[in-house]
Image (cartoon, rainbow, N blue to C red; front, side):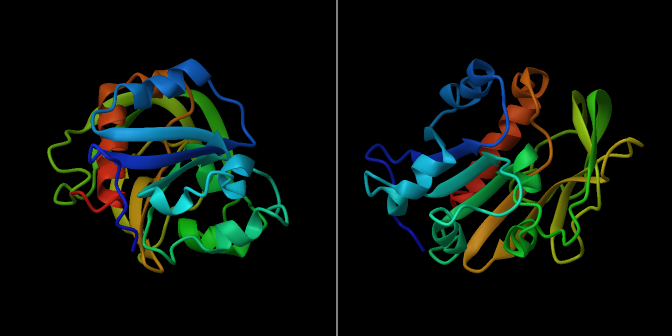
Length: 216
């Protein structure tokens, strides 16, 4: 397990993007407002190339990527090492749909069949399925606006934290699992600034990072 931390004991996070457009200022604002987290937002190809030889220094890899099909030859070996070191893995929103044809990513997400539909601009309630988990402790149920995915939910080998009963959404919105030596948190929400600016959404992103980093 990686034990590297930032000089000021902040959690060092690689935020990995690519394959899907997003509101850059709105997304960056989530991490700029986050206390005690050093986030480095980067394209997946730059993360995998690791020109600065810093991969081992991150405590958490937060994926906000959605490449189609299979990974490129130069990226695949880096992705296939995920979980071996114990560095935390956070799959946010469309990252749970990345590499749809790759069984490795399906195993990481915990959903073998990731066929999906989507609906923009939905209003839906979020229920706390597991109030005792460190990520959800103290979080109250709330209403949010975001894109929803209609797809199979994670199975019983994952711990279900957040759910909804919206008819256009998968029922489980947030879940944790173990992948090799790593903690994994998957969170379906996070399409645009409606979600980015939601205080409870931001709090869950922070707590998810802290949990993946074994800080809570």
